[in-house]
Image (cartoon, rainbow, N blue to C red; front, side):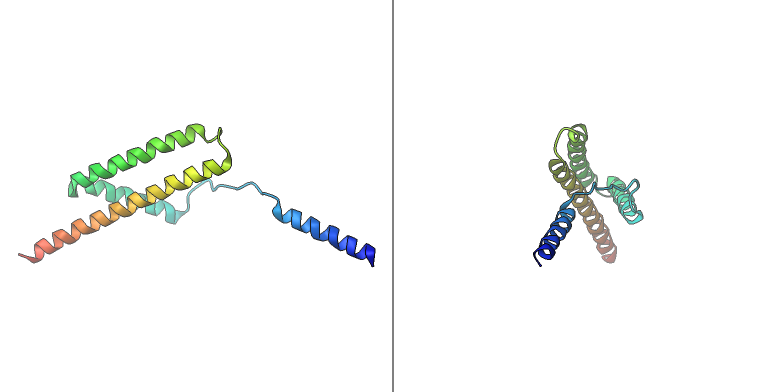
Length: 122
């Protein structure tokens, strides 16, 4: 009976430790089509703002420049910092890119709605 409990304890410990092992994270080589579509849409809407609302375009261009500056810093130092710090920075960069794209989409929508409302006054 004692041998049975010891064997069970060893097996349980082995299973527990194997569950804690870290596997290397695989990163996709290419972005998912939906993600790529969102990037293209963001770029197209950003380009449209150049004519629709030049002041907003300039504001978002500065935001993208700031994100790009930080991304370059991240890229040049990612091999020098631990994985957690690298992941935090990359997550923050992606979050800010998404935020700026949402702002751009909202600005384009608002601009078009204002134009439609102006036409309704005719």
